Amino acid sequence: MKNRITELFNIDYPLIQAGMIWCSGWELASAVSNAGGLGIIGSGSMYPEILDEHVRKCKAATDKPFAVNLPMLYPDIDKHIETIIKHEVPIVFTSAGNPKTWTKHLQDHGIKVVHVVSGVKFAKKSEEAGVDAIVAEGFEAGGHNGRDETTTFCLIPMVREAVSIPVIAAGGIGSGAGMLAAMNLGADAVQIGSRFVASNESSAHKNFKDTVVDAKEGDTILTLKEITPVRLIKNAFYNKVVEAYKAGEKVEALVTLLGRGRAKKGMFEGDLEEGELEIGQVSGLINEIKPAAEIVEEIITDYRKCLQAQNTEKFNF
Ligand code: NDP
Ligand code: NDP
Image (cartoon, rainbow, N blue to C red; front, side, top):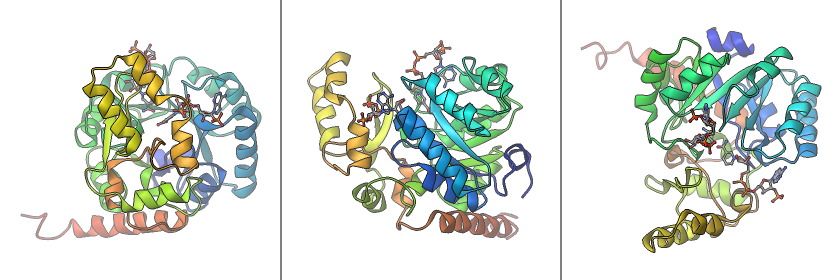
């Protein structure tokens, strides 16, 4: 498999593991990179010294390229940037902010920059800012998400038309069939998050991994758009959000209800009632926790099988 993304990142497969707070540390990122994809350390939940440690451990665990995801909302972003440059991390995925802010600085240090967007406007803005590629993330995705609710199925062709740089599709993809569909819509690669939460190497709490495996269609929802839109599993905390909406509460009350550290509580500490459980709609298709390398292999095998199956009567009508 040689295409614009495998060449840009120097990887075997155009399959990227999403940077996910509390779930994707060095263990998951290095396992995915060793399996031929691109592993990403999610730095949004890491204090500066923690990111430093994860980058060092990742470099020791793989000699393949890996990346760091940098949400621009992160309070100590300058320190994270220093760590990334000091350790010569080859690729950075920025998200939730303006791509003009850091792209040139990182590229001047030889780092490839990819920006995450959820719509056409920001896709164009990212291209103008000079990023090397974009991730276009649809409504199905877990965690932080766009406000416009554009599904991956609609977003990818629209973004494809709007920019000429490589497009990485994200949101709702967890299988080879999904990967092939996204490539057919115009993507050059896919970014997969939820499927890797339910992996042996993910740093998520066992309770959260089991919840992802048990999740069915309809169990997740995109909420808290007034603060930062987030897709999560409906639980006791979410029921409190619903009550707050019913009572006509204002943004300040929602911010107070959300409080601080709910994502850690849910995903890292395993509090299934009071924590935020951020996961995508594709969780309804995930039935087993397994090693990350097996997930990569399964997706690529499935992708190739689906590609061959397209040459059958069903498609040649
Ligand atoms: P604002 O909407 O107040 O935006 C702050 C500034 O950053 C604005 O100048 C805005 O540009 C710009 N900006 C914001 N996001 C992007 C982006 N993805 N690409 C390019 N420029 C961007 O603040 P927030 O950061 O709270 O939220 C902005 C949007 O990003 C929301 O729609 C949110 O849902 C989404 N988001 C996406 C995440 C992801 O990782 N996919 C994570 C968190 C948020 P302008 O003035 O042109 O609007
Ligand atoms: P909160 O404000 O609720 O809590 C901050 C959390 O981040 C705490 O659990 C804290 O750990 C940890 N943390 C790590 N480094 C720092 C630091 N330098 N200063 C303060 N806290 C730090 O935020 P969230 O948990 O909702 O989000 C954390 C980050 O992850 C944000 O940057 C956010 O933008 C990003 N994010 C990205 C998502 C994505 O889709 N890309 C999804 C959700 C969040 P402790 O409790 O140990 O103090």
